Length: 430
Image (cartoon, rainbow, N blue to C red):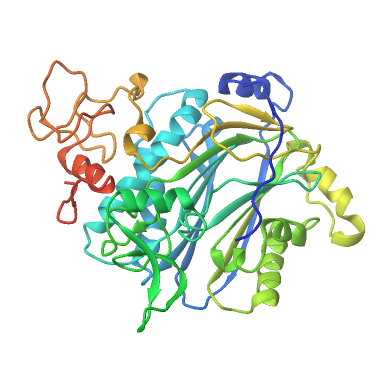
């Protein structure tokens, strides 16, 4: 596994409104320029990526612009990766309340990402295919970056000073003890491949199925304890910007996070992505699909393309243009924002429990119909298998008390299955 982020000193918590207020009042009021590049080589042809730099929350309103970048590393075929590339963003946006402010949008986004990942998984499993995929989805809105991920496709943040922050968590059973405990508690088995004679070889896998990951989209044949609930992290970059490197494990199995960042400093995004891939191939050869997306978030007053500089001779000069002051990174769960040097950590959550991720206080400003499922966004009439909380007793009889928002019967079954309570293999989300 590549090197994890280094731990930084936390300063007092800052609410999201304060961070956005600073941006709007003039200390970095201009939205940054977003530049990107991508590169890759195919071994199996199961990697896909998404680049959508010109999204609008409100049609026709350029002030609501944001950008989306993603990497999907498929396995057992390409179907899940292709489906996720086509549907994941749509499902995330369908879970975002309409007509809300930018501050509310950024606060609602982590929860919408969870709902969108779960809906994408449910809809894909309706197809009856056994393919699966990792998914790392990055939303850039101004200097605020929100990352959601399942699997082992990684996103790192490089800021001035050479400090590298890991914005994702690898869901590899070999390296994640918490996920191993979760799967065994849910009824799964975690062990290595057992050869004749009892010899165990290879990485830890989940049985049935033999998947090395604990979270993914798809993988109908593996078991419901392989969940699509993403780790989500949201940070606000300093007004001097930063660089994101999003890549599949074909990169990270060959390069540490720090090595990948160092390999492309001082280069424009397109060339940087090619150099990261080249360095990975030079280190390990083409053992797996290798896909890399590099995103530069650059202050508007530095929007002109820097001249082609030598990374060795002029690296510090270009980094000062792109990255600015030194930052620190950290690991660990925070419920509020915290200062990581010049990078402000707003939110981080990685629980695999749907109730914890959707929460009891679903957005009241969303103008949601009273019986709209929080995951699949399907409206239902009362007494049609609806699971709801604190509504005058008008609810179905769940297997366990549910403290979250409204779930239709199919999504409730999916939730219970992910927690090891029942199977939802035959369920569909109508």
